[in-house]
Image 1 (cartoon, rainbow, N blue to C red):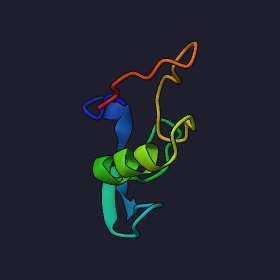
Image 2: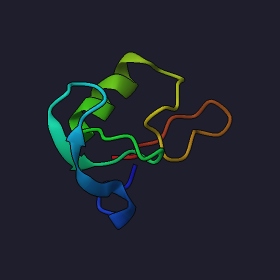
Image 3: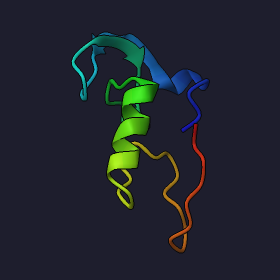
Amino acid sequence: MNWRHSSHFGPPAPCVLCGTTTPLRSHAKEPAHKVCAEFWNAAHPGETRFVSDPPKGGQTTDHA
C-alpha cells in the first residue's frame, strides 16, 4: 500500500482494527493505521484486505 498517496487520507475516524483515531485510509477507504494494517496482513497471510495490489501467482510483495 502506498501510504503517501492522497487517496489514503480522509477525515479523522476510528481505525477499524484498534479503534484509535486516524486520518489514514486503506485502498477500500477503511480507516486504518499503517502499523495496524501491516500487523493484520502479517497475521492473515494470503488475505488481501489491506493490500492495494494482491500478489499474482502466490508471490508476496512489499506494499509499505
